[in-house]
Length: 197
Image (cartoon, rainbow, N blue to C red; front, side):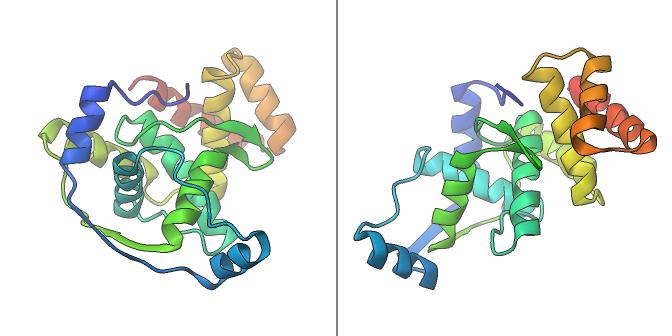
């Protein structure tokens, strides 16, 4: 599983380290339309609610987690992929799609969160080890464009999930993403950094 994020005990510690205040459910207009068309409310979360709140808190602290526009959704997907690689967010399964690793379950949970006015408190992690990991993730993500995140996560996925060699993964990246030599080399350098975590 990409970006394996540690055992259940660690996840429980992380969940308890974030305080959140779920508010009363409030449907967005598109959800009302969906309910009218199908006669059914949106399905439940793909993960337990504490895990979803933890994921959302991490994404929000990293400046992501929104789904109103395509670029926001793309950045949220790539940020979550990297957050779980750093071991600071619950693990979602990712498949390779046109714009790189994508998790339908994550998309579902983020859209469901959008329909509810859930506002997690963006507190520091305890213990300090987790906050240290968070700071490393934040530093890694800082000032990276969506294109860079797309290339980094795609190359990482090709190496760790598809199990391609470094050379084969880079060749595949150049083919499917039409990345330049410079872009590919940059992505290779960042993925090496990730693989040393």
